[in-house]
Amino acid sequence: MGFESEYIWMNGEMLPYKEATVHFMTPALHYGAAVFEGIRCYDTEQGPAVFRLKEHIARLFDSAKVLGYEKLPYSEQEIIDATKQTVAKNKFKECYIRPLVYMTSQTNFGLCLEGSEPHIGISAWEWGAMLGEDTLEKGIRANISSFTRHHPNVAMTKAKVAGNYANSILAKTESVRLGFDEAIMLDPQGYVAECTGENLFLVRDGKLFTPYTATVLEGITRDAIVKIAQDLGYEIKEQPIARDQLYIADEVFMCGTAAECVPVTEIDFRSIGSGTAGPVTRDIQSAFGKVLRGNHPRSAGWLDYVY
Ligand code: PPE
Image (cartoon, rainbow, N blue to C red):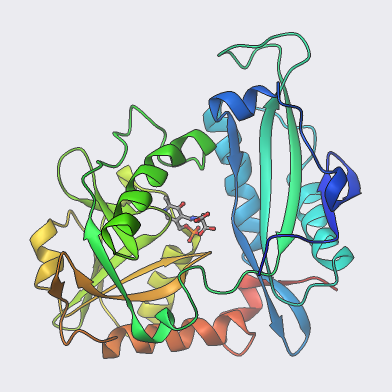
């Protein structure tokens, strides 16, 4: 499945896919001066519904603010509406949605946002589970990356800044070349931070643990999983987590919009727990799946219907 679609929304216009281009001299392309979101739309009995759209667009605006754009040319509501129009115009039932705010300038080519203009585009395409459909059941193999995750005063970890993802590309490429599916990254203190595009949880003695948000992205899936797990009666603690706490966990799973909720069954050649998706992970995955498809009490607050 490719990432083509019929239309991409760009700066207020719905453009045919081939016309949605940017010039080579766009500063964003050279310096990673862009912020983005990853959002998913699911097919439900009441039609296509976007999961936590309002929160994703709020984070897009927050990311732009962190980068240095206080004001964007559109309101949050206009971008919410444009996102739904992009899904509708492409007649998608299920898709991944990628809004991007990027630095452009006619006059200044350089490392300062002053004198530049933020442009906005929104694309959508049909993208199944990022790490493969079977991994939701079977789990994945990960390693601890040789690359450290961002120091919070080097790259802004609360913002999905395109340039920050060079770090993810280093780690993910290394892991895949070594034969793993995904990289687990440690923060500059050596504690577990997150994966290249997912947050991480571990389960021990029936309790869930996840790193605090100081050095990681405040994942919207992470937040949903915390609430769903609490609904199910699980206790959750946010705390620093060391590498070997992952090795001796009963279960480990990662979660994010693109990846969804994926068991991690092996880390650094050590099987985690039974080496298969554990019961707590399955319990949470199953409730999460119901939420996404409109079959859960949480769905009402978290699904935004396209029509
Ligand atoms: N950490 C990072 C670094 C990250 O990029 C993501 C999302 C998350 C955690 C989980 O956040 P959330 O989607 O709000 O639950 N990563 C996006 C891009 C992934 C990609 O490979 O591209 C995503 O999942 O859409």
